[in-house]
Length: 160
Image (cartoon, rainbow, N blue to C red; front, side):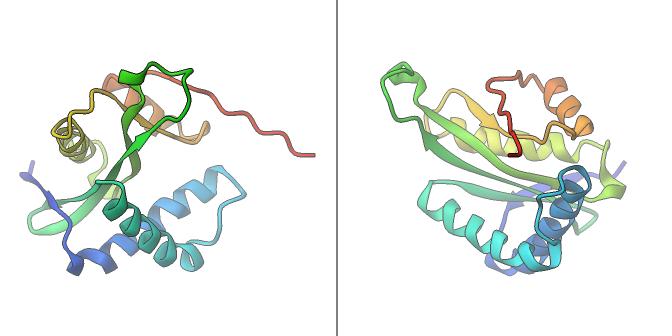
């Protein structure tokens, strides 16, 4: 198995991130029909994400294997508003996106990316993280649970 290098994303990675975002959106579109076409949404979604990274003390990390980018993770800091959450629990890290190319899945890339995101969030004094995953994405849900994530909130939708 080749060594996995995880590094902070650089401005020159934008086009690679757009390709990864397109892959992530295509996979989501196979699960959820309300997703925009990857060719239409990948670039603007990536640009919006990169803006959020700056304004929300976040980070994007890129994983490389043998010098080739094979995945990315994006994380930001968020805060709950409202007294219904204990004050010390209001700040949290958010995994915004995680993607690994098909040929590298199951080889430790996602785990390495997740560690980088956790380290980034923990270095900011935050003690817990959240993420969202489509209900129908069983592979991702199983991965997160293997990594110690537990369900927190469940969202429901009703078409009317």
